[in-house]
Length: 137
Length: 379
Image (cartoon, rainbow over all chains, first blue to last red; front, side, top):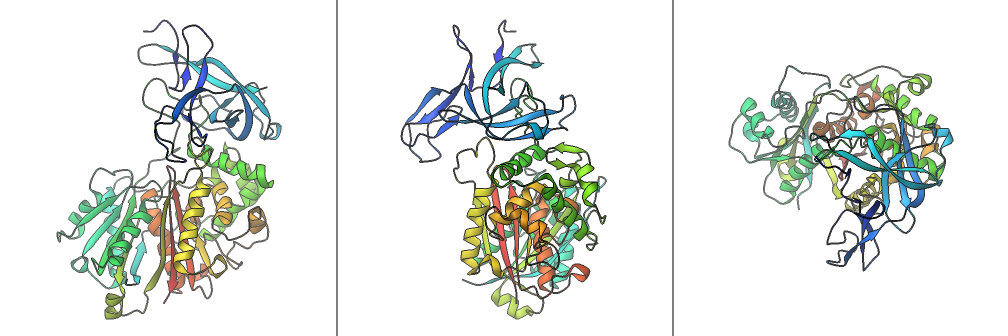
């Protein structure tokens, strides 16, 4: 079992000395930004021009839903949010620290990333995980 | 290249058949389609079978083991919710290519109950409810909310789509449900993922549908009486769009397939008399009015408000009851909607008949993403 929390997804990076961040891969030819490592751009088809970038911490709410029914054992309601990050890249995640009422959530609202324990979820070995969330900026 | 015709087509009444096997459910529709065509399994030169849940289990061959092992080539297809349409299209292509004259296409699915989808599996910890939701009601809610953001579409407008499709299904004995659901009932049903309530989500059912496709030569030989011409067949995958890999873009994929289908058929959206489109959720149907060119961008809400998409309206949509009430057995859906349109073009749709229908369109879209569109014409 790891003493430190593991990242909930591969594109969440936890440096030895420094703050966690989300990693994107940006095409050197067309500028498209992807989550997760890749070597070919699916937008412009250029090969081997991808480089890792640190995604920005702030963004804009693009779309969302308030989820009232999920799989057994998952706390509801919660806000499932699609966020366009400033500087490129779209990320999906939970929007927290907000009333989960569709009438009180504004499209285009400014949000920022926050990194917290993954709702207490642990894997079979008992490892803890760090995840990312959005909250109003 | 030969025109391709649907000579026989049918579907079973959708329902829940936990005591039957997938091939057994598929075999029933296959026999019905053969009967409708006035042919037997001995006449079939190839079979294309669509099924998702047992994609690695040779469902097509197992159907033939129930209805006749003639040794013909069988291709099993899986393409998410476009699975049935893909099997139909493969059959169409084989005739277009001049390889065969008489081909069977079958779509079948046995569904469990409950939510489909869910974000992430694999290593580590479950991601559902941690990184947003990957459940289908949520994914299509987010797509609907994008339309609300851009065009002011309301919860009530989305709900009206469900009222309409449930109403249509009261006239379809093969639908899972024949129950009126007034607006207040739809809006006050359990909220699953805003704005989709339970009655705005498609019904998980078991079902099958099948079609016998023939070349022009064969159709003339056998008699064109009830034949329906396949005027266009289009299949698209998701073209790159900015958010597609995070928020599946069902719009771009549908628009791409629709453009190709209209071009192949040499018709425009105004020529289409009825549409069976992929209303897996009420929010999805709203998007596809625009994606299929039935109205201008931003006017989808008006289409439902003004009744243009109801039976008797300008372009009736999902007069079968749609996935919302007829039910959505994933692999069967793409052929079941072809059955529906053919039934209208043949003038055999009873109470829900779209009068004078000459051209109809079917549309399915499976996340991942695959969109299949067919345009069918009365002969």
